[in-house]
Image (cartoon, rainbow, N blue to C red; front, side, top):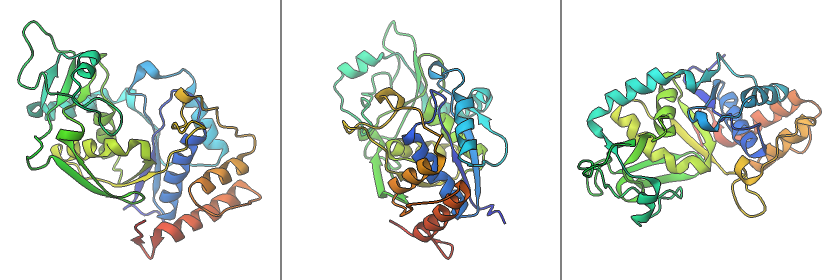
Length: 300
């Protein structure tokens, strides 16, 4: 029986085929959904259309199919959902403003570096555009450092208690970019709410975005899902394994071995399985033992 109180999702960006790092995130989200007898949705996050690589979505779907990772319902594609993002932005209009700053100008402000490596916005256009400037991007105003709501706290099911002060560790952030595309932060909040997602399981490289997303949820009167940020795979230089750092396409010619490697990275003691379905039975049971106990979440 499906647990309607649990709806999870996997949301890859179609910038290339799946690699081992993205597989780990997919396996973690799939296992958590199955261990809770919940739904596992699939969303193609192509809101940054300039980075989309033709044919990538098909390659991702093919890999998931070979690995017998069955998703529930129809696949959602962000590039077809602009009306939803427009509506959400309109609902936030009293908290937004146009920004004329270029990336170089923000970097030159030396206002500090956010936890995710981006430059903290110094608030140059917060009180109005400088004379002679036109807006390039649209930003969301966050509370000042000492104001109520500036500090966002949440309990991550893998990482523990997380706290971030939006004013000092982020600054006013972009909702619509200078190139006209909606920003990830807005799109993911709108999509999760529209799909009824209750549990988000993804890589720890996205944990620094979570406070911004929770703030958006509060402004939009959207329920905040449960979060779990699993460790990311790194290369020999300690960089997150990604297409930008030379990650190779996932080899699905030996699917059982590939899945076992992903499970072991996540700490599951699986060493062998004859068939893919045997692997999933072991992995789901192992995940349930670790994170689900008589319907109560274990905190790690």
